Length: 287
Ligand code: SF4
Image (cartoon, rainbow, N blue to C red; front, side, top):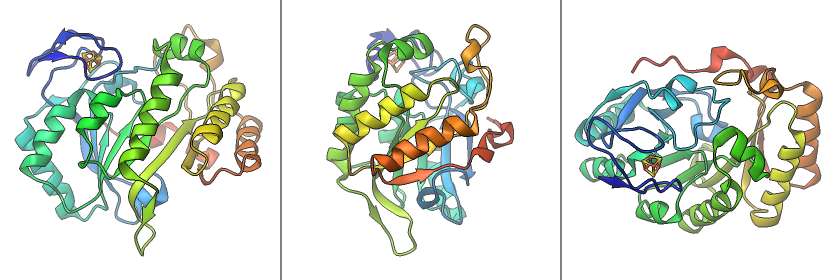
């Protein structure tokens, strides 16, 4: 395939085993881990866990990524869409509450093919960096029940420095608008599990509370009724030697400042405990 799936629009050749674009990923699904996952938001993980399919690689590749080994180094195992469909069924049989596609963007065509082979009777979650092309999201209309996009930056110069994406803000705004158009407002089942909707995630970075407050302002202005998930789990990891400001965890004071602003803006959602900032919460990649 000649790939233009994400906003990088590389027009690069990708085949079943190799790829030449920014992401350097093959077109066939490359997998880092498939297992029930307990560490998403409560209406996603519930009691039995979310059926997470962690895809290898990423179209954003933030320097601080806690999943650096798979997002930047692309470690993983290549499978077929038919095998991916089998894995959806296996997760469903384990009793998970949903199928959670983590960093799925480079594999959208194969995911649609896999869902054509086997469509689980569970909500399908699209869990992404938020840096998405609207044209690619439109292909997923009708397949995805829940979107979990990040909104990482309010400042494109930070997005350029940390993620080589100097158009992040406007791209992510358009992407989340399309996600909301597809799902409508959030819906929950009797047990409190999410059935449909969008939760926007924001990870607070050390020394960058101004960025976080700016993100909350953008969300308030554009998506005032959408659920927010504020994350304090930042753990220094990845390619951060050149970035001294990223070389520590966030402080309780930084987190409080952002969380209080979320409350001041009267936004609804979830706020993680700071104790989640621990490498123990990074999944074990078993490929
Ligand atoms: S998915 Fe990969 S190859 Fe395709 S446009 Fe994005 S970065 Fe480029």
